[in-house]
Image (cartoon, rainbow, N blue to C red):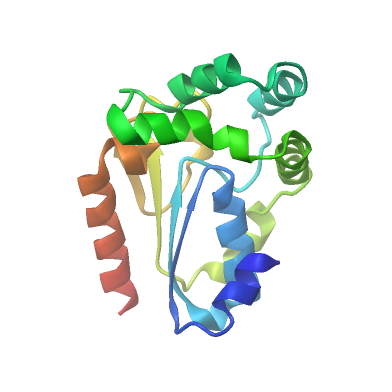
Length: 176
C-alpha cells in the first residue's frame, strides 16, 4: 500500500481521510497504529452498507466518463459550489484518473466493512466531520463519539476550511 510506504519514514502524526479516502486512512491507522497519533474522517463511513449510490455511480462512470458527468459529480459534492481555481481543479481532476481504477476503488470499498475493526482504534483521538447537506452519505453513516456536523455538502474541508481546520487543531491537541 503506497500510503504505508510513504509514512514508514515519517514521524508520528495524524491522518485525514475524506470520502473514499476515509477507509484508506482507517486501514492505514489499523496497520500503523504506533505511528498514528490522531484521525480525522470526513464525509464517509466505516462501510458502504446502505450506500446505494455506489452502484449508480459505477454505472455512470462506465457509460458517461466525460466532462458533463464530472460537472454533475462536482455539483453533487458541494452544498455551495466553490468558485475560481478550486472549482476548475475539481472539474478537471477526473480527467487525470483511469476510469477502471476509479471503479476498482469503489468496488473494493463496497466489499469491505471496517466497522468491526474500529474498536482497535478506540485509544486513537478521532473526529468525524460530516456535511449536514451531504447527498452522498447521510448523517446515519457518521456515527461517532466526536461528530462535527458542518453546514456543508460532501466536501466539508473545501466548503468550510476554517471550521475543518479548527477540528484538525482540536484533534491534534487531544493527541498531544
